[in-house]
Image 1: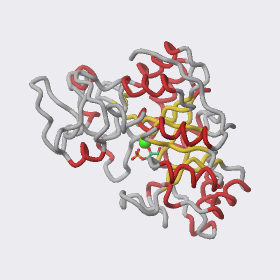
Image 2 (image 1 turned 60 degrees about the horizontal axis):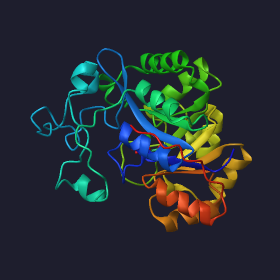
Image 3 (image 1 turned 60 degrees about the vertical axis):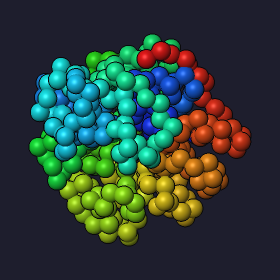
Length: 307
Ligand code: G3P
Ligand code: CA
């Protein structure tokens, strides 16, 4: 497969994350893959959201007020209620807004359903771009998402109904959902997310936890690539600070692709391409395209589309 240019949440540094505005922006500039996160509403509709709850830094009610922390779990709200919130602008003056000063505000933007994203892709005419769909489910907070069986049934049901199963990968830190995808839809590649350093210390992969569906790197010489191979994964998706040339070689020897997240600085992108990664997930797909072009990599075609 060619080098994979992935727009993280559609290109979070440029557009309101995980929205049709962002995915249309990414399609319009040209990417190989739209990275996105999904949860489910009370009435069983898959929606695109990084948080399992309404995010107080993103969700504004009909009066223009950002919701109070911690935010209602999506799984407790019917789709109509979720659609009443505006996700078009990060709460000004929040720490989160300071991380993405160039993000364009698009007031009135709604949280999309996964079906709406598929429809947008179809409308763009791009018959190559893929979706890298992350199941947002946390074994430590089981009430905030459907159980793994229900989650995977909803996802595979939608993909089957839309005839889109051959255009996706399913990724997760919760490997239970990946195991179910492998059993129910063996042709859908699974992407094993890992984080050893960085900002989410609750996801520990240095020992067996409920995140890893019983797989334990200590049973595989401490090697994450070997653990993921044993689990049946197609792609290893580590935090970019965790990879080394030796680990990438080890993964490649096992016929695993390595797609790192989330890389936003051109110098890191260039270094990781030189290291041999197979793809990069970035909040700045525009910069990633530029760096990939400098490295002589083929660029995905632009498919301009209005959200
Ligand atoms: O695809 C990998 C990356 O998206 C995982 O981190 O927290 O942005 O979903 P997060
Ligand atoms: Ca994600």
